[in-house]
Image (cartoon, rainbow, N blue to C red):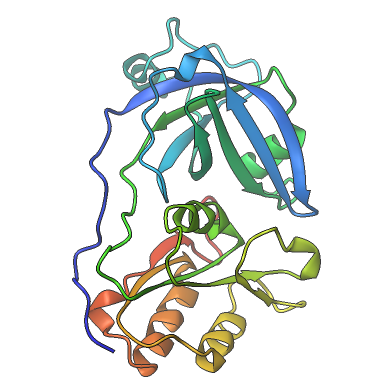
Length: 257
């Protein structure tokens, strides 16, 4: 397969600021994933770039004394005395008409601050985040699009697919089991007890898959070593190495990555 541009296409960066927005509803999408919807006039001027744009969540301890007014500058100045847990999350959906933003959280019990917060979030709770980041822009010259990831990449994969109506898209998403499947036109790759962070399920699925003819644009994200293995199997399949640039969303054994 022919090479694509080695430059990963990104939207222009929007002005970065701190947003303080209430939760308006929560929904358990699957047994291991929760959707938290935030919104209101506080995000009237939020300009989204679509696809895999992300924000940095600021998760403060309950009762933390925050500076007022809370701005990006005041939050940074106060870091020495009140420092939040900071976690990067991809926006699943931004609706400027209703001023709503959806975040999807993989639930790991109480092992991480973001997972713990999401499992207990209720309408009226406050979400503080900084962003947004630039976002991936699918190459319009690609013959088809290949999207790869685990459940942590699902918000981005869903958003990218929405940006590709009428295009040929092959998406492979690794999840725990059939109970974690969502209403998306993707190839679900079940771990079925294989520990998350093992490369075998995705690598086997990609090695056995039938790919369309032509030059693909590749977007992939997930655990670091798994993504390295994904890159190698795609190169073995004939996709140019320079066009496969996976993103590391997390690292096995590293909390908060």
